[in-house]
Amino acid sequence: MSDAPTTAGDGSRTPKAKSNMSLWARIKLFFRQIIGELRKVVRPTRKELWNLFVTVLVFVAIIMAIVALLDIMFGELAFLIFG
Image 1: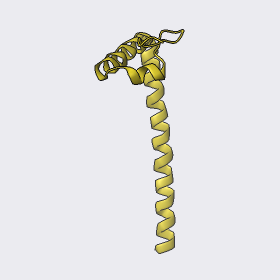
Image 2: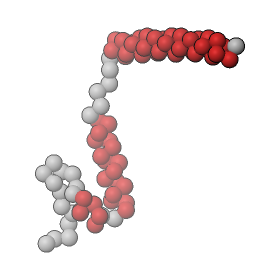
Image 3: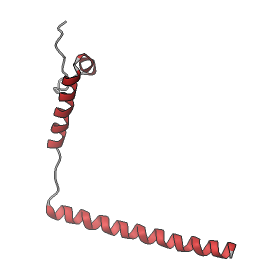
């Protein structure tokens, strides 16, 4: 057996090989993996971003209305019970 770290078929290091790596090598591997994942991120276009923004605003407004109505109802109920 060699002392070199082994890699899986996809190029990632196996858990056993990670335990044999030095602290700095593991830190470098961690940041390389972060950069690799960030390169896979697909950023939305301006139109998609606007649509998502409007969708979130509408959803928040609806939830606010529901919570406000429930608050008013429970407040009136408490007023009726405790007068």
